[in-house]
Length: 256
Image (cartoon, rainbow, N blue to C red; front, side, top):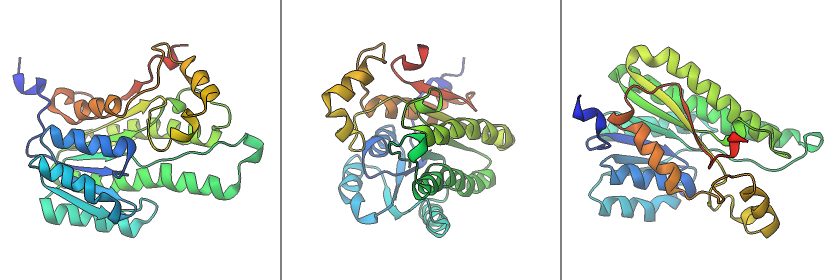
């Protein structure tokens, strides 16, 4: 048995995390740094990354905040170019940016539909494409897309969000199949409701929180660390033979 494959050590690796300012993205950036990686922070507003960058530097890691609105191709390209110029390459991409709002199907506005497709799908695709070109040249890399349990179940009022997250899981398979020849693995994680700034308002409503918990057999919502841990695993040598998979982090929601 090759003991290297059992390691979660990311020393010497460079990771780009999109949407790194808060929530799951921030937790992933910190966890990857704790595992030894240097980190590029993809930020819609670069001024929001100062405190996180300081935390990562205190760990003894290199860190580079970059301006990166994933709905803008020029910013994606510029951010990836900065990462490559500063670190020489990118070993790990965590494609984290995404959002959703609640609308009944009959009330979904066109501008919201266009915005969520541009962010959750176009942003995920073209960030992976741009970083993927770097990884193809390197002949190695690991991409981890942040999906959702919503890609596997129907959630009332979340039709467009569910659609985008289902698409991410299938896109993950397609990219994995095409890029395996370059020694690039592509996987996804699919969390349930996680305590983040984005979910805080809804989860503070007692009735809503209880309705969520009733659907989770483990009886609670998740913590960001419970997503960041699996991301580190998928980025590590321990997951080197895994590609095209979506790992459900849902407390059992989809078992029902």
